[in-house]
Length: 461
Image (cartoon, rainbow, N blue to C red; front, side):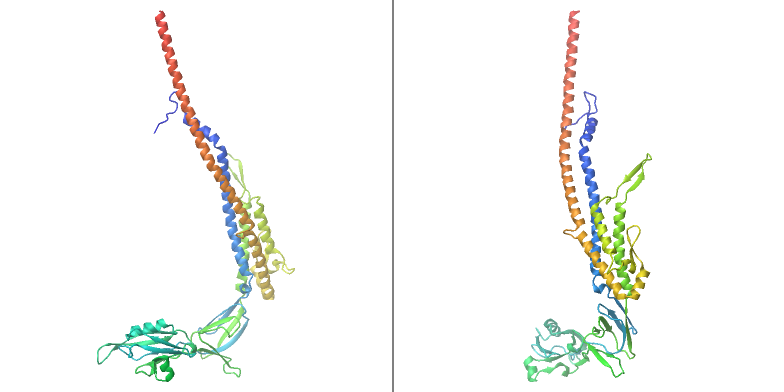
């Protein structure tokens, strides 16, 4: 590898000269880099804004649906009854007693060292009369339990140790058979024998074997409405959850009660207010973010001069139009009534604010009208936000895509300039190297001529 030594003949700092020349040559590339950086900063800011507006579109869509504002609370007078209210619930109170809770059937066989039949053949008959045969691989109690579990008859089997056989000292086991679902529909009867044996009446009911027992019978949960009155009415469920006692209300019981349980359904004003407040907060955040990036700032430099800096969105028509579109969707009247009537108003600085107390007062006077207004505003905001942020043709999305193409083009030009500048530096280095060579030749010629002249002078003397 060669070594370049500056100005060996000329005494010039050629590297410094070349660097200065290259700085001048690189001015166009420097401008391209600056523009690419500015564009990328703009893209990043636009992407952040687009993400917020897309989230607003989702929130608006959700809030415009009836379930978002059709909110109710449910209170129970008993800790054994829990309830939740959904769409369609109506305000009111109802009393009932919990007569019983739902449970699954549990049956255990007598203690056995192994299944008495070889091969073990069992038949299960469900509450609806469906008959299923199960055949185990061997008389080992574990194999019998495995065959039952694999058969999918709605019954789970567990082998449980039951001590030792007094006569043989062998380990005894019981099979615990449990219905996989609660309620009377989960009831079953288990037989030793085939379905044909069951039909013929020659199969053995497991409960008739020595030591077998039904630990728990399958039963539905049951409520009695208006207990003790002439209008008393029972309601049953195969699970401990009831969904048909009150419209839109689901209640779950955990234990029977002796005293009546009172269930009260009321409009959830706090929840409805939270929906409106959340929508306004999302809007305000977007408007504040736009305003911040539209602002022009000024600072003082080290010499006392003023430096003015434009924001990322200063003068940007796409952002300005998006801001106006969303603001108009939120502030436009609903059936001739301004949203400010419901506590949603435009502030002096062009953002949006929520008056919780004013909203609560309006909700107390006409809840249906207020809920409809929230849905309308949310729907309009969702539509406007989608037009702006749609991932295919949203106005901001399209603007970002265009700017990304610009940045790509700039980066391509910058890369081309890298090659051009590299070639230019090589050319300058060769030029200055040749200069040194030529100067060296001239210096050599000068020295030779000086020597010749000196010789002629000496000869003449």
